[in-house]
Length: 66
Image (tube, rainbow, N blue to C red):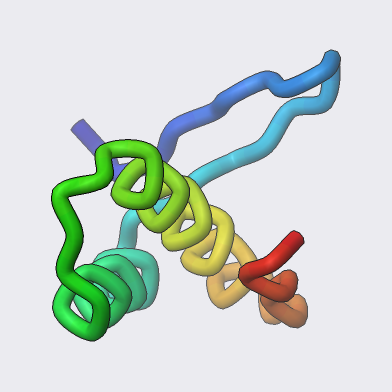
């Protein structure tokens, strides 16, 4: 496992990268607002992967609300 995942949403491919930055972002979000809501955890996980990919490619991270 290399920490890189590709998902397709509405025919658009997204790369999720769970390197150090992505994992740290997920850890921060989960510990800042602990929840049993699996939808929120999945949202945090996907956002963290997108965040990690943006950091890897030196692009601005999207807003969490997007």
